[in-house]
Image (cartoon, rainbow, N blue to C red; front, side, top):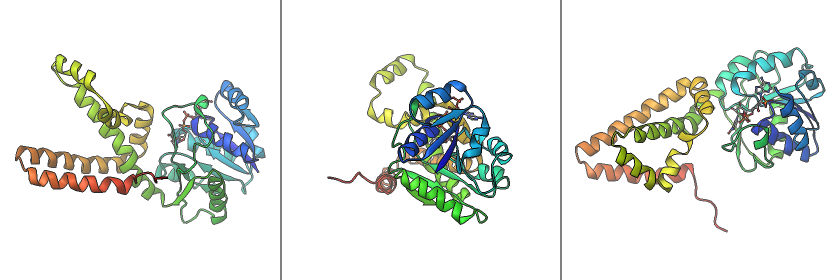
Length: 284
Ligand code: NAP
């Protein structure tokens, strides 16, 4: 199959590496010529260009640009492609993408491969990024089922685990497990660094270890990603933050009233809840 990839970064480049290895012909378009050269050198594409007309040969196009560039990219593609070509995207939020894009292209399949690393750009692209990772497809009532099936087959060939849900459902779920943790973790870092006693702060920095590493990791990541989540998933993230604030208020109240019994029950419940989200790895 001739597959187009627009936006040769971590996700686009990684997709290209895998799809080429599976025997597809991969055509890439990116913003910078240098990125196109690197993508070709590292084997992520058969051919790459900054000129969108390269996509005229593609049967399926993956739009792997930052979220804000997805809709303008589809507008450009719509002027170029024949209507049977399938366009899919990999954006981390789905409702705003579907709202902006679905009416532009009938064969549009919204998607979100939930895989990544802390790195960005073509140099960060790696093979097998999507293996055993969720790949969520969020078709609407008007998305053609054959187009969904084609994208699902491609995602399956990457050994990803396919999930289907509506775009709003997707955005609500990722607000809980991906976007809220970023702002909670950022708030933790901001609270810790607000310590006014510089001796205490210096000692805290020296003593910080695995617990702080785990809880501060996502809040200490790429600010652009956090901003993108807040901008594009604002209503769902706000709802999650309000619910989280209630929990913080509850914890404060339990400590103020020294209600140790209720606090213990609360911590027992959270201990039981965690494996439901992150099951322990299977033992060999
Ligand atoms: P990235 O590494 O920064 O790659 C994006 C690439 O898109 C950039 O390298 C840039 O290439 C290119 N680009 C930017 N604007 C463009 C435009 N207007 N036209 C064509 N190419 C353009 O970002 P990423 O992490 O791969 O994320 C890409 C998409 O995947 C985003 O929509 C994101 O929400 C989604 N996603 C990310 C992750 C993650 O963990 N990172 C996970 C799942 C989904 P140049 O070098 O040519 O400028």
